[in-house]
Amino acid sequence: MLLRAGSLPQANGGVIVVDADELFRDLDAWRAMKRSVNSGWIEVQRTGSSNAGSLRPEPIRTAFKVVAIGSESHYDSMVAYDADFTAVFKIKVQVEDTIPRGKATLHDMGRALLRISRRAGLQAPNAQALARLLEHSARLAGRNDRLVPAFSDLLDILQEADRIASARARGGQSIGREDVQDALSRRRRRHDLGERQAQELLDDGIVLLECTGSRVGVVNALVVYDDGVASFCRPMRVSAAVGLGRRGIVDIEREAEFSGNTHHKGLAIASGLLRERYAQDKPLCLTGTVCFEQSYSRVNGDSASMAEVLALLSALGDLPLDQGWGVTGSINQKGDVQAIGDVNAKIEGQFAACLARGLTGRQGVVIPEANVRDLMLEPEVGEAVSKGRFHVAAVRTVDDALELLTGVPAGSRGSPLEPFPAASANGRVDARLRAYADAAREFDRSERAD
Image (cartoon, rainbow, N blue to C red; front, side):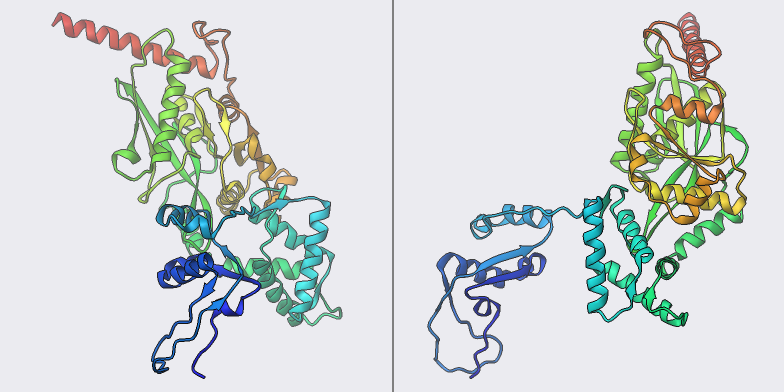
């Protein structure tokens, strides 16, 4: 009478679904399951303080299927740790965490949300409320052509929206779009302490930032902060200083050990861009420093590499950059702008900073063209963009961004040895680097003469 069936006997003849993380943490459970799968028998074990004397029940013949749900890293670590792992789990199934956003999937997810709300005893969401929930699902996916079927999270939102709708004491018995939006806003406010503190530092002038006017060698990069529960973005000033020398581009963050490998890679790519574009007919006699101003935490990622290159080109060509624009995007050595993550948060962070100082109608964010399909902006930001009070500019190349922020044509040349047009932005940068090369040559000559 002291014997109790565990999960394996209960699943006999059927399927047992286990959490991979919990299973592999308990090595005794993992060994018992492996033994049962390989032998086809369940050995009954005594546990705890059970006093069953010398009785030992006979093994139970078993046949069951095991489904372990876990991450890719769990699978890879267990393959490396235990040679028998693939004998137990013969089939690996990868499940996408997003689904295509089409008419059929929107319809199916809407029906699923209606079923979930009915089972939870909630008021039924109307069509506008379902549309707002599906917009949020697309926002979680980070792309406007995908959806995240995060029904647990969406149910939490519906439950809060249901309470809000009930408190409003309206005549109808349904959850509306405004209820869902209110629930989303409240969820954000519960986790926005860091965001509010960051904005206060900008508003009080403790963190220096300009959203109007022009500056040489200064650009606003967009930095995402993530505390594990919520993430937000604020613009941060990136500055560049240049002079005659041979060190190339110096990353101050790296010198201070405040940056990661992907950030180092981004600046190494920027160095390659400068060499290919301006050092075909002369040596690159340059020492330039790039820095995230007033940053005292670790910087990682290469999404600021376009902003860093623009700051360098501005300093070299004495080209003032419009401070009303925030810049995000990574680059390659050919000057093409590549996609980045968190594009919506970055646009909204620049918008919040500009809104606090007053929108002028000339402010906005420069993003990679490849990120256009990812845009799922908050209603307030989308409305400002549609009315022309704020702008989102998509660019393909560094030259596109350079022209936008300086108002000077970038300029191009037919071959690497042809000169850039003198009045162009690239022409001014090339002229400065040529002057550096001539000065270095003259200095070396005078040093040898001495």
